[in-house]
Image (cartoon, rainbow, N blue to C red; front, side, top):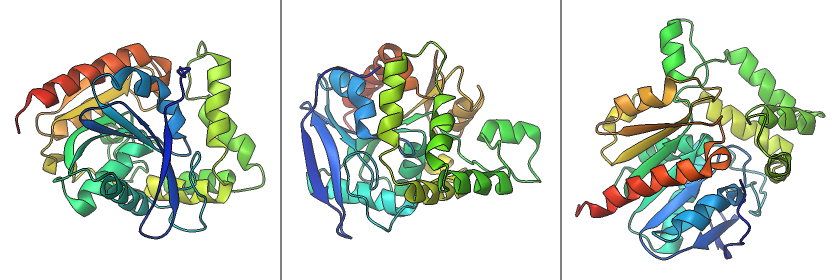
Length: 286
């Protein structure tokens, strides 16, 4: 659920001239919170409230998202990864814990792929498939592990619908089905309204970029402490996050009673899992 307090807002400018908004709360080891596709940084308000007692929590609005500028360019995963690098540069941080929800994980994988791991202190990966579009040569078991449940034509059709004349209705329906029936309607409405701030064409372009990503080969190369969090009732199914954890050396997994928006539906258990993980990370002298 959304917390009631309003963390301080700030802005910075990327190396291609886009003004991005972020929330900044707490003092201590930094943790960067990266939201999913179309989602605003304010969706992490419960994490900013709970985790700021042990860390400096910085929640980023990606370009086109939330309170950030809405340019006509750059709606692809690699550019968002570049924006994260610019964010670290702006903050003057040599490294940070990176926490991503949904497509925020895809941005993290792209960040590591492009820029390496020197600026990554640790990772928290929450409820994201490692490959979206299924391939004909993959078995059903492989598709379940990867989270690849959609065909290529189906994926492109969905993106076209998001960018089309009925895009708002499509996006509302797409997001609403990711919540449990007992999730407070007011909180869900606020989250969806926040997502609708993103221009439909930009949302469609970014959706295509996220769906085309496949970072299976990157996972075994990760050499940072990693916590994988999944929703027990998520549309991804119960195998995806445990499989991702099994491919990352030393990674641990926590399955939480929630659907896809784990950090919103069950913030108490989510925050406790992250807090416990951060204590382990902070106790490591390396």
